[in-house]
Amino acid sequence: MKKPNKEACLFARYIHDWLHGYATSLKANSPHTIKNYSNALSLFIHFLASTKKIDGSNFSFKLLSHTYIEEWILWLKNTRRCSPETCNNRLASIRAYLKYLATREISFIYLAQEAALIPRQKSIRKKVCGMSKKAIKALMSVPDTNTCTGRRDITLLVFMYSTAARIDEALSLKVNQLHLDAAKPHVTIAGKGNKIRTLYLLPKAVTHINQYLSDFHPTIPNPDSYVFYSRNKGYHSKMSQTALAKQLRKYAAIAHEICPEVPLGLHAHQIRHAKASHWLEDGMNIVQISFLLGHSNIQTTMTYLDITTEQEEKALATLEDENEKKIPKKWKNNMNTLASLCGLSDIK
Image (cartoon, rainbow, N blue to C red; front, side, top):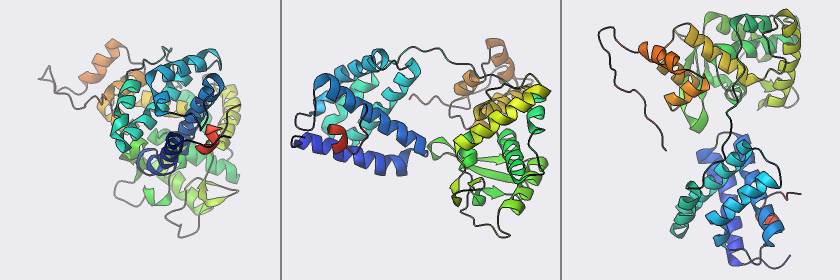
């Protein structure tokens, strides 16, 4: 490899600082997000190397302009056959990096502004397959509570359904986030963007969690231990999403025989979606549901639940006083190789 120029070295330094400093400590809360950022940058550098013959010796920050990014998106779409959703995720990662770059060098602000104007690929939103209360009941009946694995899994299922927590929020839960002896038992969740929200627990969930802690944790649990930890790595390593996905598919296959409404390809997000739908069915107002789900925008909740115009009017009506026809809004819209040098993996 030829000797890298000053711009390439600066580019690499900012990537390292962003991925291993800024993004991990101030922005992203999930290792999956960091991985997505890293993959997007690796793909962009691979695109420059394979189509533009760019390496560390001839790199320039001008290569981060909208012209090259738009070409990259088309390359992802046509050459690598990426879906519109994947292209949009990659674009979001590059935008995030350029925003960071703009905070470090004022001369790069225009790059972030240009990237923000690049249109997203049109995609068809995939509807989440719903689950009825009957299907949830069938699913909960499957884990064998005579085994350690069964007791762990039923506790996790009950927790996920009763709180509608995201899968990473549930698996990232630590003992010190549980407040089971409070007058109103609750759990403190650190959601996307490190937004904290309090979710109250019903007696059934409290009973399951207490029994689980008694079986799987010491008499005095370490406050920093993961509640649902990895059996192979111990209390300070959380259970993996892959392990949970495997268990869910196994339970779904059995539950499907009991109730055909249980989807065979069940994934954790469907349990969260089911709880949100059931809250709506039970008459909970949409603002409360939006808060409990950790959505920053109520329209996200409307879209998430696939609410029709008629249902939306009915949902919003639950917020109105009987003698008032209009209510003030209680939410806001938030509008808101060179690869080796940069410490990224080479894309083949």
